[in-house]
Length: 123
Image (tube, rainbow, N blue to C red; front, side, top):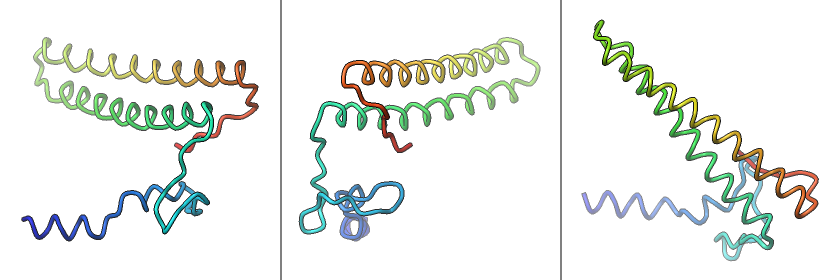
């Protein structure tokens, strides 16, 4: 098992993986193939944090809605279990609405405070 992990770690250099954006264009700020693309302004920090939050949040919403649907469909006529699944799906919808609201508020705030005309987030 340890040998397998060493092989995986050898071939999966995380910093090189993050040195590319989603369009597979190399990021210019690299040294010896390693990512050094640290954000240079507060807007870039907020954009990166918002991008990470949106990826984690949408993944969580998808999983939560899927689990709720699974519980609901497998309730076998038990009203309490069906209600539990329904509530889980409703909570997933509320979570998605909060994600959208968070994104809108942050973009609005950045446009007002920094004057940024566009917010570049790769999701």
